[in-house]
Image (cartoon, rainbow, N blue to C red; front, side, top):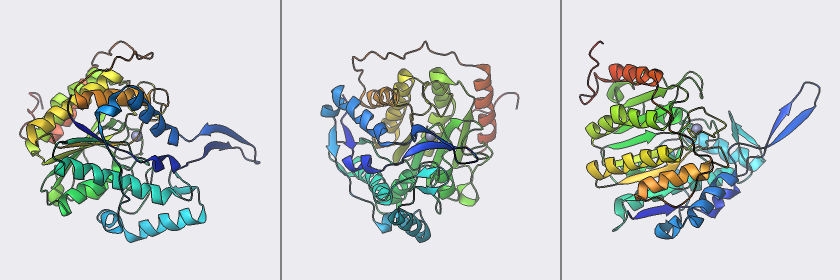
Length: 372
Ligand SMILES: [Zn+2]
């Protein structure tokens, strides 16, 4: 079993996001319960890893909060001050679809600190090269100046910039398999070629009007921003096909010194915020693919950061799949929600072929389609 680090802090459960309340004109409301991004997500994942026996086989680490210096590498001072002041005032709405409480800025800082801790372990620990960080709030929708979509600070961006500025790495790759486009991460690195950003997401969903394959980066960053929008219902086999045709060749050609994953388990078949049908075996295979890629390219240096995933019953099972893939093992656990593997669809092959055609001028490893 491959040695694997685990970064977690119990304070991640203190970031409260409240209930979803629908309002009618005239003042009537309906309370439909917890916000999608709530503390139970992390609690259930932790419990799954604990009771499956995997946690005792991982080496656990506690993070520290990110400093202002760490945050200012990717965020503006104005953004930090806004979050601090809004939380001090007790505001619940911190940005578009971002909810919090009086300690949320502090916990978001600890979440970004968890990402930094994971990088430090992967780069410096004598035994451990790969780390899973169970952090929240998530980060990939947060841009330099704005919180968005449950995200306050952009954890993966803070981690990548830390690796470059403090640890002097020259090439870092970020693979974002959260079902939503990683628009914040894209914005932060759009001009850069020392960070390769690849987002695999459900086409035409959230956020609106971002995530097209035509968004390639600008100036030195042109070609280093890779969006792979996939059709609804892609499933396990479709994701693996996409990895083999696009993700693996591009990362292999880039030769990063560290591979970061924005791991949202919201492409799952039971997720309320997607329609992608990825199940535990799919997540296991995706994690295995990134482990093998990191082993081949960067001495196994791999950091997997928790992003989204909103099905409370399935998030722990999907994440179990991720950890199994990372550690190269399979726990004896029956998934009561398992479904037969979905075949690769014509729509998926067409979507991947279109991406390949648009990206081929920037990546020699992509074979140009014969009938382009
Ligand atoms: Zn998401």
